[in-house]
Length: 149
Image 1 (tube, one colour):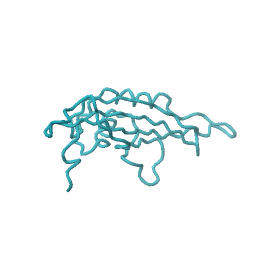
Image 2 (cartoon, one colour):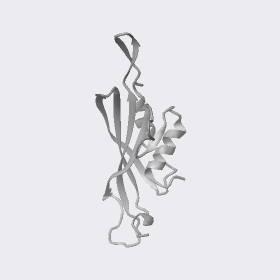
Image 3 (cartoon, helix red, strand yellow):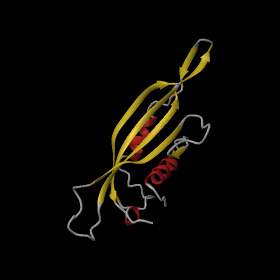
Image 4 (cartoon, helix red, strand yellow):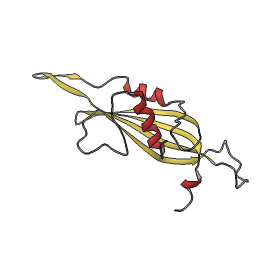
C-alpha cells in the first residue's frame, strides 16, 4: 500500500507498463525523457456534497488536486538537416484514461472518485514537450493528516 496520493498514482501507472518511469515530485538527476512526474496536494478543498459538519466523528471528505506531467523528447535528428517526431502521440490521453474513474486501491484513504479535469499540452522548449494531466481526487481526509506528530 502506498503512503501518499502520489505513491498510489505511481503504483497505478507502473502497473500498466507504459514503458515510462514514474517519479514523485521530480525526476532523478540526469533522467532522460520520456518520464512522468506526479505532484500531489496542489490544492485541497472540502467536498461539500459529502459529510455532516455538525458531527465531530463524521468522516470528512475532501477533493485533492494532483498533476501527472508527461515529459517527452519532441524530435530526433533523422538525417542532416531533418528531424522526425519521437513524441508518443496519444500517450497522455492513454494515461488520463487509465486514471479517470480508477479507485487507486493502493491509497491509504477511501477514494470515492478520481476525475481527470484537464489535459494541457505545453509548447516545445529545449526539444521537450510536456503534457500535464490534472486530477480531482475525492477522498476521505485521514486523521493522521491533521493530527500533529
